[in-house]
Amino acid sequence: MKKAIVGYLNAIATADLRSLALFRIIIGTLAALELLNNLPDLATFYTDQGILPRTVVMENIEMGRIFAFHHMNGQLWFQVLLWAIGFASAVTLAVGYRTRLSTLLCWIFTLSIQERQPQVGYSVDVLYRMLLLYGIFLPLGARFSIDAILRPRRLLTQIFQSPAVLGLYLQIASVYIFSVYLKHTGPVWNEGLGVYFALSTELNATAFGEWLLSHYPWMKTMNNLTLIFESIVPLLIFIPWKKNGLRLLVFVDYAGFHLGMGFSLSVFYFQFIAIAGWTSTLPEQFWNFFKATPFASLENFLERKLEKFSIPTPQPLYGKTKSDAALATLVLVEALYWNIYTIAPDRIPLPSVYSIQANAFGIDQRWNMFTTPSETTGWFIFPAKLNDGSDIDLANGGAPLTWEKPARINEHFRDERWRKVYGTLLDDPQEFYRMNFGRFLCRHWNEEHPKPSQKLEAFKMIFRNRTILKNGLHSPYENKTLWQHQCDEGLLKKWQERGF
Image 1: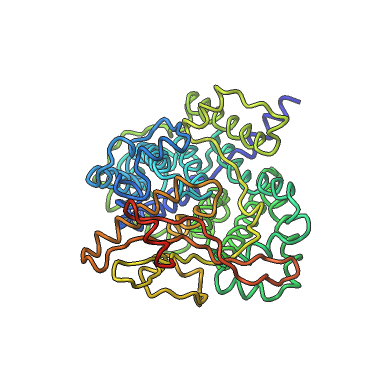
Image 2: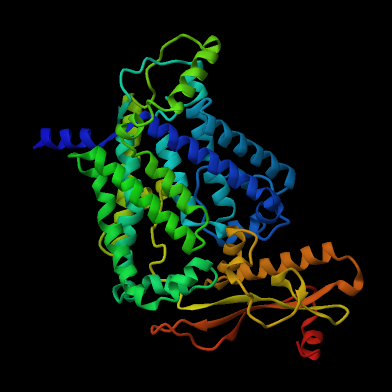
């Protein structure tokens, strides 16, 4: 029995080095692009002059990461320095230079930046940091990299076998397997309404998503197909028979699944990170297809041209040492145990020592995306009073106040991080967040508009919403006041007297 189990694990814990290289290129490129997108918001998200100063985060949000460099200094110059280190690490990871060090630095930077501003985080951030963690123990730079050119290794095979590969595959599959289980714990998905409620949330639904929603009879079928797809297809990568064909099928299926999700819902760059993870499963036959194409010729041409810069000292692949295997196995076991705990917290113990360790290294995770979709939908209006008596909407960049529904609620935000900034206001309780977001809005507006007549006095945070009904209809819109804010002390009475 033991021999059979070991043989099975050895058969499924394999990855093509070229697939691992493609995985590295994609996640490194996505990380660099995300940092470029974040650059204009460094002061807003990560400095003490932004939405959440460091003291507020540490007083109100549970901390525990082993790396939290973004908490060391709240000034902009320091955050720019950290950003530059993170960006350089992402670029060197993408091109495969000092690949293991670059992967480690990207993982450390990711832990730190997620600890600094958890209020703008998504599930994709959790998946990204776990992919990086397993990547530390994998030979991501063995192919298609500067490392492979400058430090050639004797590759007897394109196939790599390691517990880290098994851990990576289990992590990718866990996103779907445990998500399905959590979906079944509530009534929405069991009643066939999960997809319907997800697409009915106007903050997230795209134009294509709204078109799908208009075909209400399709919703239950899409709901059930989603549950079946997420329950069965990820398991196919753990079948050792015909595994090359099965893994190629799984990749194609999930690439289509996530692209379709991205067209229907604003899910940040989750679809791209998820597809990047699935590229690591691409089998040898996929790459054999390119042998007679210009792609292979280009790779050989570059290797010949750069050969003079190489250091001819063959080295074994990293990731093959006993310490690498042991550490990867430890991460695998801890991540799997944590996921099992999330679906049965009343029956599975969670020792405090283990919890502290898992939080410290970012292994904690919970795949509850869309498990309990919002039963309300709407948009934000921040009616505000200026010193000259004019009414504006702070949530719309200071435009004249109107209660008319925007043409496209989904396109109201600069990017997905800002969508999460506003979406977090709906969480309960979030008084500390609403208060500090209000302070930020007052400070930012008055700094940008120094004229006394344009000074912001007070405003409300209102979510104009309606209830999503189960028959494909909605209730009328109504206003829900989330917060009311005075920019200066003693303005409440003046505010009320003016009928605001």
